[in-house]
Length: 237
Image (cartoon, one colour):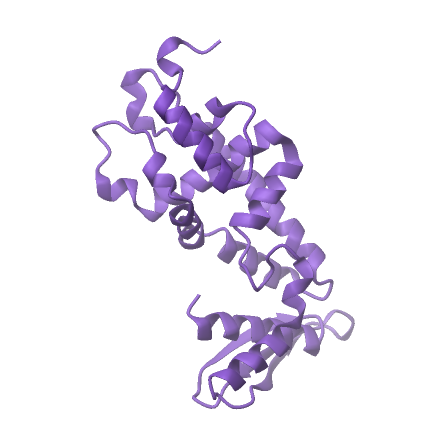
């Protein structure tokens, strides 16, 4: 049983219930969400911090994103999968997810944590992983996967449907037409490996000179990933 000082106040419980609606998960144990939003600087007040939940959430996040990417396109090479996963689970996009959810507003912390630190990308990313860990413990794998799909995976590239990112060439074409950038071009940059296990690198380019590269086991797969990378750059994501 938690000690009395570990129990959230009534006002905090109300705020956490409202937050859980935005998270898309109704917690059976709101104490888990409270812990996920408690910084170690409160240690002298006898409250457990989010650090262990962050550890769990970080591990599950890497698995969940890798699983989605693996199933999304069988033609993607391991190197491209690794790069895409690293980009999705990096601090900046996680911090952006934390800002959309206003997680910093709910962070319980001690006097030693400055306001600038509370809103830093490092702590904001930690909060997303800690909340994910809390969702995993409270609701299981299905609830945690739902959280990742809803709040972490980039919308329009993978989103809720892993197959949504496989038509990136069409999406790039439509974007270029809408912004009068002409027809995107694709150029083979390199071919690596033996014939039975070749990997192709392709550059996608628009008329103003901007470009991005992608790799895949086939030229078509490489073109799709180059298109997705260029589309992300053009949008400024």
